[in-house]
Length: 357
Image (cartoon, rainbow, N blue to C red; front, top):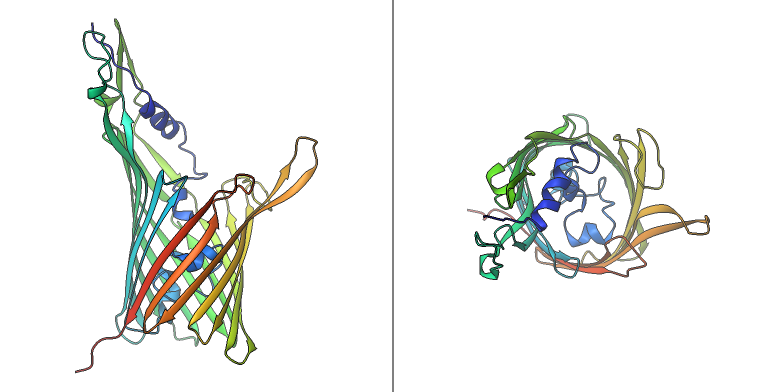
């Protein structure tokens, strides 16, 4: 008489099976990339001008100062349980067009698989425990170009999504992003329409791996193959450059994220439109040393005594830049100030030109 039990996998699969609505789909793509942007609470839609533009606003690739730009980042969340990795590169095709590529992975590894913990004789055998990963991947191909209108640029992303839960389930998705940037003196304006076509994730489940046999009964927890939709999101930003004193300069930006999938727990809650504001400040000395601050994830919270309070997510960072190498650090709260859980994020960026003949 054969028995099989399912512990961690069951929770993962059922959560995906009953979460086919658009809200919070592919949310790993909302975390942000690069320690510079994370320290500014991702308020960079208008001012982004390096390889991270492939993520934040592909139109920003038009502002690259060199022929090539590459970046890498590694971060860990929840005491190292979840790992977040980013790798990207961008290059100038000619004087008016640019190309970029981005790879993102967010995953939890070494999850115990106890589906075969009990053998056919009903004995518990810990040697039968295997391990698997639950990971989300995104591959972005960016193209940016200057327009005939002075200081107006645009960019597009074609992105492929791959989500995997060991050998139990996986999904493939595809979507498009569109970005714009416009410069007016010391002001910069940006717009980023994510998932403008709606991103579709097609899930498939391995029924054989999800069968549970208990004595004479067989239970199949595998849901039907289905589509998961990510509705469009609009990000608007405005930034301004300031001269503080001599070689000390500053940049300030405020962004508004508009979602259209119903009420969310953000500062401006609406149905179907919600608005999430966030802002960032960067101060630099001669473009060599940087200090950054950001505030985001602003929410109104009702306490147990029915009093309403405001919570927010503070971020802080520093950076240095020398001879094309940029090293940035961010101390970022993952969202709950009461837990005081902070993540240390490091990223490196390298910019260089083609060698002259």
